Length: 109
Image (cartoon, rainbow, N blue to C red; front, side, top):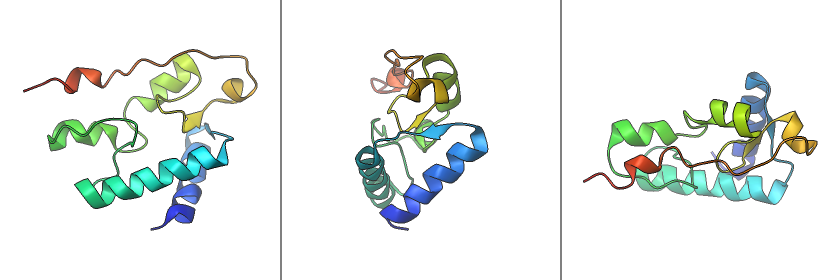
């Protein structure tokens, strides 16, 4: 899989879930590159905007799209990293900072 393949995957996922992809194509390319790097590095395509903690069960939650994406898009108009967004977000009807609900795992020993 390469960057262009990921761009197509992003579109399919968004369409299937009733989301949109971020209209910033450069941002989408950056995400695709990050996912490819994480797949190579960790064996799973974890979201490039979150830290892998080394626990497969926890890290599985941040495979893109992460388990938090649907609720984040519903509540804030976008997922944490901004890859997937709602129509309302694109239209400027909804905005705000999305909390990192995965952060609780970063400090586990």
